[in-house]
Image (cartoon, rainbow, N blue to C red; front, side, top):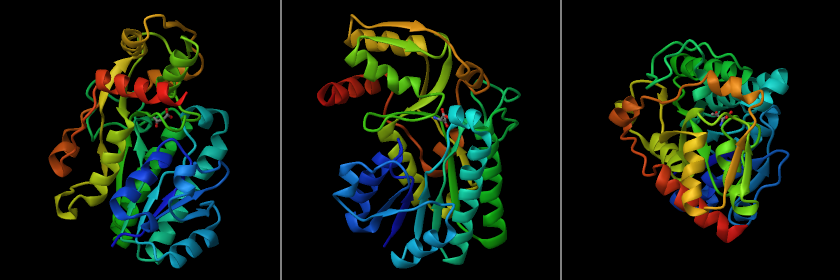
Length: 314
Ligand code: AKB
């Protein structure tokens, strides 16, 4: 029986991951934690919720002990754009937070820890097309540096302490429940809100900027599939994964098919440099081979679903 702690349940991914985990493992077996941002009602009303800051080691130990936790999803992170504004804070939260989780994990015999890495682990010296799983990792953002360091740390904790740690390099995530905050791929979510509310969007990336992306239901599937993957089939701790790649212009054109009056202008800011340092497309064949990764959504299907869901809500 899994007893799961989700750290960072108020975030873009955590807020949709918790309901998906509760559906599969039972409401009482998934404990949602938050720090500053209030948790959405769908989480507070349906299962256990606690306050947790991963920088406070005692609180973390108390939560693991009290709820008899055996599985952790550590989703709390400062993302790429905010990380460039506050590099020291990004390092503190992303790395000291992670090491506290790994330490608590080893002391409390946690069975499995899932911690997402990101395409931000790659940098300008990495091949940008069909980026392989094993390649140069020389990121130029603090967020990327914390992701590469985190990847090394989770491998170290496995090698030294036999802690079962698993990670996927997430591309940009498009979702309809919680707005992302502080990322470079956030434009791909904001654009839907603005298209529906104001029929216009000012994009902070150039029209031809291509990035790998994934729709939220596939992200949940990926988290659960990797959690459940047979340990004997996994040959590594960190996997490339992707849904599909598109440029800002291609996404705008797809939205226009549903909202013909939608217009877009492009005013690239400091986030353009970050996007230009990341891959355009990802080779996720090892995730497909080793644990059967197989996304369901493409650009058309995602756009249709996002517009339907957000039009109802906004
Ligand atoms: C970001 O844009 O910082 C994140 C990521 C790609 O990890 N969404």
